[in-house]
Length: 274
Image (cartoon, rainbow, N blue to C red; front, side, top):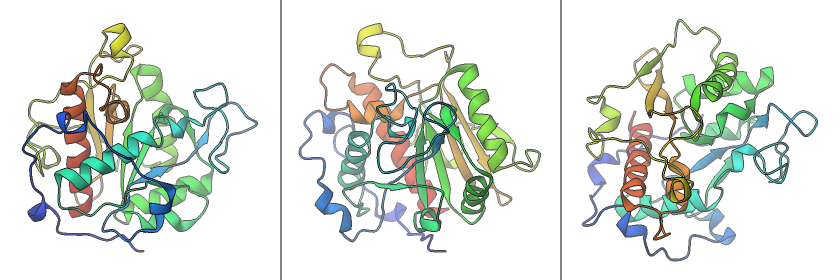
């Protein structure tokens, strides 16, 4: 397995300005030709089957089935690729980690996921796994990989997310879900984040609401392995990916973009050092 750990925390530097402000004027966010560049870290996004529509799901190519756009996009593609590439701009600008400029999409039908120590997934209320896929994700997590989930809201989304997690980690008593305390290391590995608040998606510009559905309160949760390492970081009732995507829009509040970047950077640093 090629899960690599880098001693990156010592080399990280804080920006002279806030993360969000730094992205109010974003330059080029990557071209496909940069996908083969050598780098210390590659941001990977999980492509998964959906649990509705399109004859049983799938993610062939970049189209997939089901999803949020009447079949035009698969759910795993929400905010893709701009959110990923703007986050990578933040990673390269605000730390000394050398991140590849282009994201990597990984699936669960082969062992490619084992090449990436950190994987990001969105709209996980829609995910579905075959037994082999669930087993592969379980092995990935237990061998040292870290999964960050984002952009799902309310009680129904939570239960649908848990349906997938029960397949991945069927012995729930061994790996209980916990609410993270302010003092947890993941909130202090790079930025001190005792002042966390709910990060809404772009819909805030139109609605003024920080929540979606009945997800009124942001939930910072996690599943740990047997050694206490966070292997699943759960961002429930928030939409960090949208904040990354819209950070260069002057209508989207800087405070939300700043929080979203700090959360993502802390989680990556944690995943790369634990």
